[in-house]
Length: 395
Image (cartoon, rainbow, N blue to C red; front, side, top):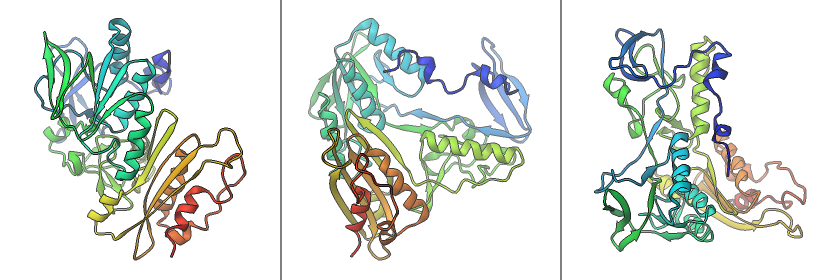
């Protein structure tokens, strides 16, 4: 949907250089020595690393795509999706080879977004997911709506079908085998999530925590003197569960990087935590979630009460009105909001921010009912759907 991939680059090395920041691209750090405060760096074309000193070190090595240890995983035509160069290589390949059938393994955010874009290009797309619905982090009833939304794009959706192996012929992938047979494919894309890229941290003895992400305090310091971490390599603190968590999202990474930078510049700052807010799209449907799901809340010992309502994105007499489903979760005893999920047409998804704010503030359902939200017929009914859902929690 974007012709020039350079438009997707947030900041270039030249832009950093204009700020006096020395950016060395294509340099690979191969080791960290916290005791000596040095890193070993392999410059382009070099056979041996050079040692560079540091006063303070920030680990921002990000995350790596999950590649399942299955037979045939190294075959030609199997692509993880994580970086801009990978995206560019995929688009070049699609234009050069003109494949007809593609399989997306995994029905989370990346899988759903890949399916939409591939279907947009006119390809025959199949999504294979081991869970009962796509977007399995959502509650099953809301995940079922996502599954329907993706199918509406003309995508074949296969749920409850774990992949057993990749079918390979002449070194190239030819299909994906599940318990129910083989799905033929000219190309396979992996949307199985990510894991923190912690090889350097682990080898340097820097403590790891949830999901093997680097443990940091509220200032983004690690337990090792002089070493900080931020972004998809680092863990966060969940403001609803009150426990460490791993949330590899761009919003979280950006905030964490800012906090680390402020502290390094001598400006005290803290990162309070996250509520896990995210949003995506499948065709005309916007999908958003924040806080805990029902299963996550129950696992933490909450007695969960839910309110699910279906309404309209604005007053019904507008030509572009559409449906919106809001699910709101609360703790039965205290009334405290625990999470929310939204699926709807244009104008639905960003309403998740109201729920995220309620989570951040620790609001109860009866507090939320009285939020003074904006109203005008082109935008909402007098009672916003989020408030209608909150009203359903109040007894």
